[in-house]
Each structure stands twice: as C-alpha cells, then as structure tokens.
Amino acid sequence: MAKLYVVPTPIGNLDDITLRAVKVLSEADTILAEDTRTTGFLLQHLGIEKPRIYSHHKFNEHATVELVAERIAAGENVALVSDAGTPGISDPGFLLARTCIEAGVEVETLPGATACIPALIQSGFPCDRFCFEGFLPQKKGRSKRLQQLAEEERTMVFYESPYRVVKCLDQMAEVFGRDREVSVSRELTKKFEQTVRGSLAEVAGYFREHEPRGEFVVVVTGKNRKNKLTFAETEEE
Image 1: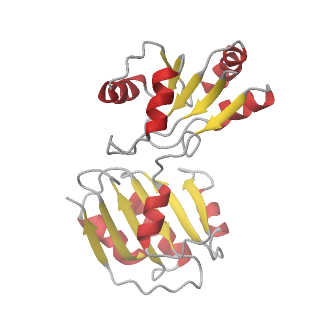
Image 2: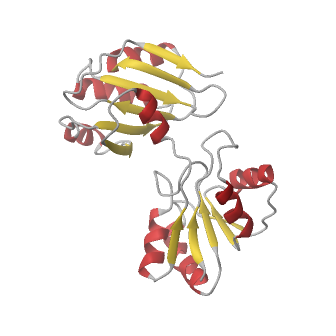
C-alpha cells in the first residue's frame, strides 16, 4: 500500500541522515520539498537521481494537500522533506499529514534530525519535561504569549532568527526577569556551532556585541528552576 513518508533531513551536517531515510528517498515515486534547490543539493550529495521533485511550502500547501493525498491513494509513494530537520516542526508538514490521515492514507514518520533536542540537552537545564514553543509570533501576540509563559515551570525551547534574537532575549528578560537562565545555540552541527549560556541579560548583551548569524535555538529554564550557570560560550570548530 502506498503511503506518505515524512522524512527528516540534516539540519547542517549532511552526514546526519539515516540509512533508512536514504532508502526512502531513493525509492519514493515523488519527493515534496520546501525548496527544490536545497533538496536537489542533498540528493546530489547522497547520489540519488530523482527527477520528480515538487515544491511544497507554506504558500502553496493549502491548495495542494488534497491532490497529493489523492495521488498517494492511487498508488504513489510520496516522501515529504523540509529544508532542514523534521517536517511539521516549525516547517510545512502538519496539514498534509492530517489531510492524508483523514483520507485514510497511511502516514509513516521516520526518526531523525531536529534542532530542538540537541540544544535542549546541551543547555544543561532539566529536560525530563519541557515546553516546545517554536517561533514566537513576529508581531501581534508576541508579548501576550511571553506573558502566558511567565509562570511555566518546565524548560522552554524557542526557535529564532538572527535578526530578532537580541530583541527576543530582551523581551524575555523583561517578562521572565533579567536573571532567568538561558542557553542559546546557533548553527548546530555546522562548522561554527556555538552555545552561549548565562542569564537573559548577559546573553542578550553578548549578542549585542557579537553579530548574530545562523539559525538560533533559545532554551530558557522554567520558573523556580535554579541552575546557576556561569556565563560562558562554547564553540565547535
């Protein structure tokens, strides 16, 4: 029976892909990609020739998900990938998976790369339970969401762009308190991977002095969870 395969791809280092993911991408009839150029480069690196790659992103997914589900129901195996990490986690994927399930089409999700778990574990904060928030609203609702999280006792994980990370840390310091502990990781698995730990005020100050570059994962300790980490940065070379 044909199905939708949700396939995680590397978040940086192209060697971080499973043998099973390579097999699925090699055998799929069609690959749906967030950016066909990015996926094409990955497939070339893996030695996979795949002419049937189609765009599937947040701007067209509402118009195409039912058609994709119909094609799978008709016998076509489809692999869904995003530019990096696991589709559906702050990337397109949820809508297609739900549409397939509602249409009686089997969905199989492979385990694999995602940025939030490595950043969470290397933060040094409690990770037995955590709250994944992904990207905060860019404008409307951003402050309200932070206020709602002010009493959260679990470790919180956020994604942020280099253009907003300082503003994000400043806003968190205002709502959560300047001394709340944070661990900020960027460029995970890449050549210039870096993690900066300390209070919200200290880490915001660091990135005001050092231009933020790359994709960021911000891990904030929950309320009343004292870790007393000394301000420090670590960098992989």
